Length: 108
Image 1 (cartoon, rainbow, N blue to C red):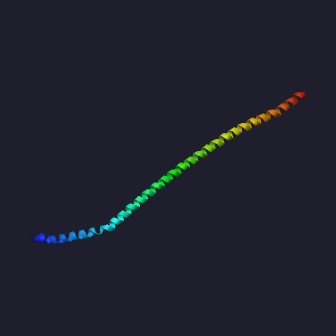
Image 2: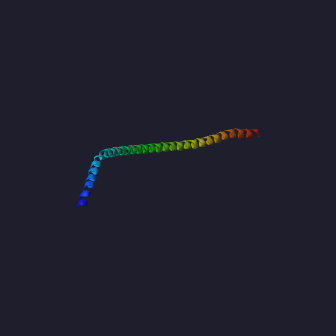
């Protein structure tokens, strides 16, 4: 019995220390709550940044597609102009060849 009564005093002291330590958990809980709120804010900021980046990427893609379409139109117009210039050159050549052909027939 002496052994149990000898263990009871340190055991009671350990319980008191453990219970006293429980009251110190409030600052830790406050820090945990603060960290949770910071994490929630960071998650919402990340979601907004991701949405903004996706919108910017979609906009850039749309602009690039528009530019590509414009380049296609310019190439088409350039090709049409080249064909028109070639046809006009041919017409001018024919116009100059006719008078020369008539002049050479009359000269003979």
